Length: 315
Image (tube, rainbow, N blue to C red; front, top):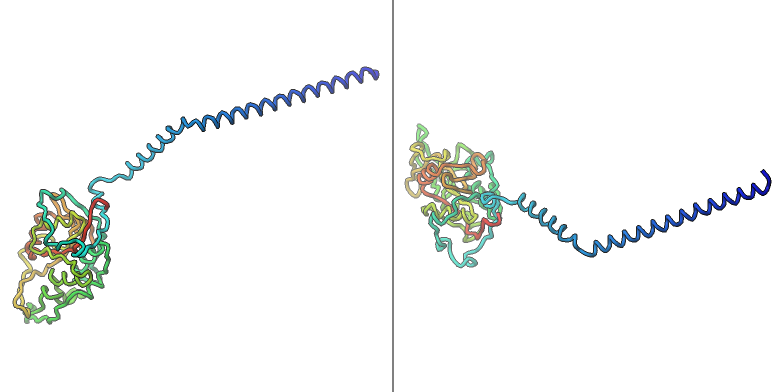
């Protein structure tokens, strides 16, 4: 190949390279222009806001689904009661006895409060009354331990006197204070509503509510308002013709039942009364209404609670 041919070949190669470079430059410019259009188009689409209703609808659907997931039945709403606020008699403007007393037909058909259970054992084998009271204090947002209440409750220090056969001749009066010891199973009886009211007033002056001998509807009306009620029944949670005895006290003879027991009423429906049972530590234990009322009547229709203003709507 002569020099002229070599020169022509070199020029052709250079021309071809310049052409390819120009093609690549045009291709890059097109890519940049296309990208700009896409970006501007996306910005215009985003700023137009037409897609917002779709996102809002999705958010509303998610919120609705979450609400449905978190929704509770009326019974659960009652179980999750908010802690009632304690009101003094001056704040409430009335004493508990002056409160209206709804009839059974005016009460909710069923109520269940969410009250943490407590067990009287092993520290207080005879301490059902103060253990139930401790649960009541906790329920109204003013917790006091069962051991503190056991130490602070009134006592009747009258010694126990027995016959040669083991029959109790004389002892203390549960209407005065705790008879015997709450700490020793074989050396204790119990305490009744009167001194328990004094114990409540010692902690919250003037706020003890004695519901003894009140209609049972009145007791349920407190439960319906979110306030549990301590009631005296038998340990078997039904009426009994056994275990009755009489002994002398400084105030005179008293007839008592060895199965005397106190529980906390936390709910009810048409068939059952629900209790927190300090003897077993069971929560929401169902007791047939007839059995509960029979045992409650035998123990003198005793019941106490605390003057509070509460609502089941937040529970």
